[in-house]
Image 1: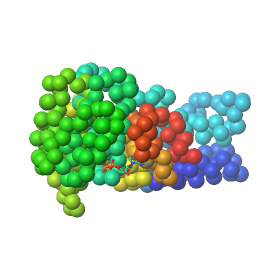
Image 2 (image 1 turned 90 degrees about the vertical axis):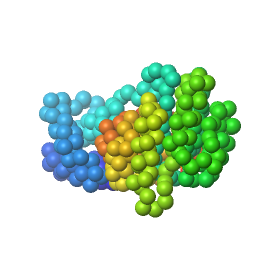
Image 3 (image 1 turned 180 degrees about the vertical axis):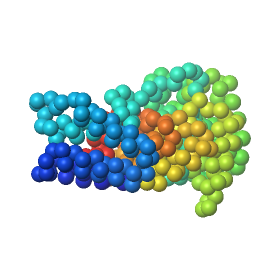
Length: 293
Ligand code: GDP
């Protein structure tokens, strides 16, 4: 994972070799760490080339030690992969707006559906939820509880097994009731070896609901697996943004970089706990500092 970068930063800042040698070594270590975290080779080289160009063009501000200045450039360039200085736009561009949540079971999808509903309700939107996870028996019940807690209606069909039908009927009904922001929770598993079926179902829901945005929910501890997973979900239903859950845990969330690269989608929020209000708008700089630091 990206631990390699942390070690390289430490080695670089504490090293005794000459600055130029240390820079070359650092860049090699950075490339190795990124490539071993499944970041595309093309992207790795474009990132390190940008760093090298800035080194040539800019001179260190006098207040900063040269080595620290160099690391700041690395931070800046890595942050720009995640959106740079700007926090992402999270308000819907048009109304009504339908969000479909996808991701594997246990990542915190249902919890995140509740958190998002609460987040947008607080911003003044008329929000509703649809429970289309028919494979985890408790999922609908869990969503209903969350809805009750935050005062947001939940559409569900207890006992019904046709997730595509539920999603379609739910969104239609809620649109006709003039809800402005509708969040659809989907299944995360179909049993072992049934992944193709899950992805097929995502695709069918995507095509029948035609959401304005698909959000991929991934767990901060996913690491290298994030790239493949994000890519497969992206192929089934075009992923528009990403939420990283469990950022309050020990995992640094380095796999998120791979998910961003695999989908080209920005990270919009991070989950920082189990409670309904533990959702934060993503801040690229803070995130990179965490991944590296
Ligand atoms: P789903 O299967 O993806 O729908 O997952 P759930 O929403 O049921 O969440 C699985 C577990 O992760 C639950 O125990 C949640 O409370 C927990 N969880 C979800 N998001 C977060 C988070 O941001 N931080 C922490 N610590 N736990 C979370």
